[in-house]
Length: 423
Ligand code: GDP
Ligand code: MG
Image (cartoon, rainbow, N blue to C red; front, side, top):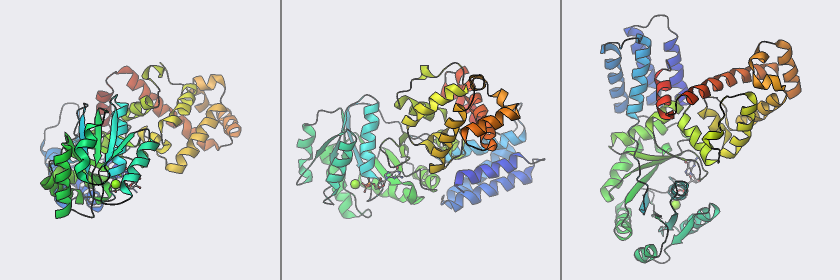
């Protein structure tokens, strides 16, 4: 079970309690502390968080209309968001960016991801290989850049070439992939400082991996002594149960986080927002991220229709396949599915909808009310009746979500409200 699921379980069992009192609140806090510590979050951070939750959950006067239960859940959510630190918004303008970090954290991948991100935002961007520490490093960057339609530049013999290479670059933004090492030492420090002096970057991002967990703090401190850092980029937030540990420890080091890497593909890269992070960790839909994915896939908001019917969903699913890994899309809309399961599930859903009559696709309610319709659809789709029933349940959940979104143009505001009301 992942950390998010564990916390959600703890919150669920708290929310289902008959009586909420000081004892049950304290038990919830101990549960959360235990879960966070076992996922490598710094003990000091956890204990401070626990204390703060306890103080606010029990001492504060209840807001009008809020039960103690709701109040506690809201405090927990707010504090979790707080402990995950602040996001750093990179200005979208012409300039130079340097990425730094030790070996294997995802620096080179991140350089190309960042270039792609800027290109999506309408700037032209190129990458510059300045890592002569390993013979294959420049080739790796060049290849990844070329595969993804990003212009590559590189130095050949020595770091002193940097200024002349940079002066020949026409793109709005150049991202310099600097040399790494196994750890911070005097040589790396010197290399970084030299690269910094020669490249004169506007932004320096330290790349750390979520697998590092609370080690991210020490990294931030060590690199900050060598060069001025704008913010961190945390990679492998997808595969590691230690994302929360890395993010909270970055914050404890006083560093902001600009982006997170959520997969190996170049598109698996997002602006970091602690609210979205916690919302998704706890399995609540992050509407803004969904909309971004749709936009990237060329599905414009106006194509999202007035009403969500099964037919519309079918079209959306077929289009969404262009938007990226299905398991990610699933988790964004609050549906649980593992990587392979997601593809299976998508196939099932398509089969189910395609086995529905026109009338049923317009209004799935009528399927819910009829056992014979349910059986006919299951047979037609080659799935169990249970699958049909669970699809209808999930569809209704999704429909509610879309209806809510439609009512309010400020998606972000809507998400926040939803998250705050989840108890
Ligand atoms: P560098 O040594 O710091 O330049 O690291 P690389 O860019 O060569 O990346 C090392 C490995 O991490 C590669 O296999 C990447 O595909 C992988 N990687 C990088 N970022 C992510 C991420 O956000 N998620 C996942 N799952 N893998 C990543
Ligand atoms: Mg590299």
